[in-house]
Image (cartoon, rainbow, N blue to C red; front, side):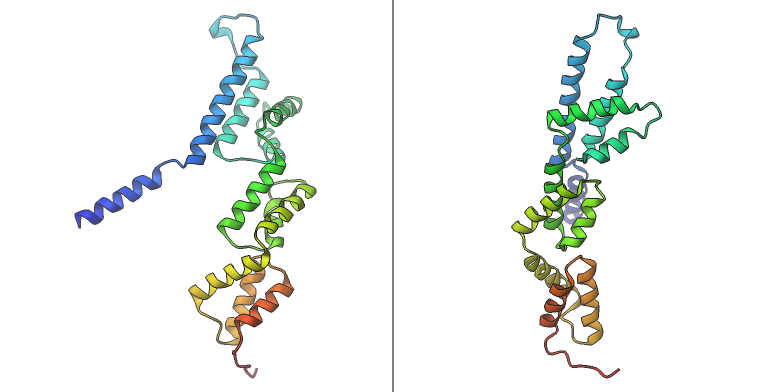
Length: 214
């Protein structure tokens, strides 16, 4: 019993530990802020510490780094978040975004590719579903299509739908009735796989199911 409690406690501790990616994001953001702050303050005339206030650029840049420390973002997502504040100035936001792009911390192509690969690794979904997810990230259409092509080159929709069917069958069992076959069909369509592919795969999975009279 004592051993079981110790195991549960350790699991809780492990769960609360920050992930490596989170730690890296925070560390990179902090380092970048220090470097940029040094660059900005070194160009100013010396001032008494108490009189030194943050410029709009510094405030905006600091907020951008804080947002990036939580998770990667697309350029449009970052612009929208920075413009939320009452004190935000569009010209300053554009300047900060340009600087972050220059430093490599905002890159829509890289963001889209990483997001697409991560989604397919976590959950087998079809091209139309992944396209919708990428659009929610406010990415340009061309960037989205390039990311989709690259992602489905590495993992074909055929392989992904087989994974999805395998998971469904493990949880629900192979379809044995028309109703169960319909559930599998709906499940795969919701996952964003193409109609023709879903029809073919469902027929294969449902081989042997006897037709039922209405």
